[in-house]
Length: 254
Image 1: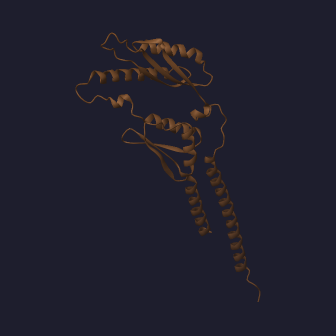
Image 2: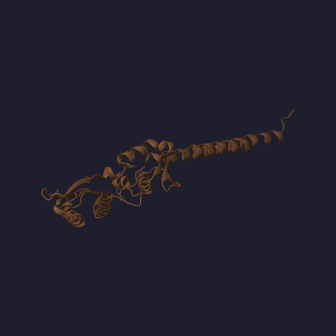
Image 3: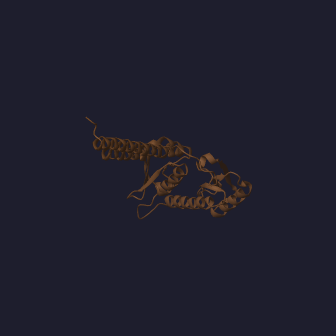
């Protein structure tokens, strides 16, 4: 009976380890904000994901091998991780003691538009915003009139937001923040963000069983099956022992 119990425990441990599943690195060297956003997105979809901080300040995401296809599908639908492009702040990064007037001007425009983008993103109903400004330099020749300064704003807003009330505020804010840009010189492009773009189900949505719960049900079924098998073996062993004891105490008559 001890041998039967030992084999049952070994088999149960084997199935438990198999049910946990090995994890594989899905992405590495992710900025902290992108890693947290991807972590929350995958967790909302019922995917078992682990965030590992790296020494460089970045992070990596690990998921179970069986969840890799579904995790990639969810992240691709949400456009994550975002492409890391070289912006003007990186291209014109100050490295020496002296900078040319052009470099200083580019840094100023870039810093101002970055601050505006951050400010516009905090408006209720706005998911994200980007501001691009064109501020021509004054010409030396007075006979050539300078080109007008303009700004273009891209706004990705939440469905159902009253955009007709947002646009005038955006144009006014940008015009007052950029020197030489008039109210009419600001163009605003609005893009409505569908729910599938964000990749997040609503918070009040009922919980839906996902594929990730299948191994748990399988493991529970195996445990129940092993328990029933163990009890059956114990009963069988007890009956065999009782039968042998009966033969020993009551030997057959000659």
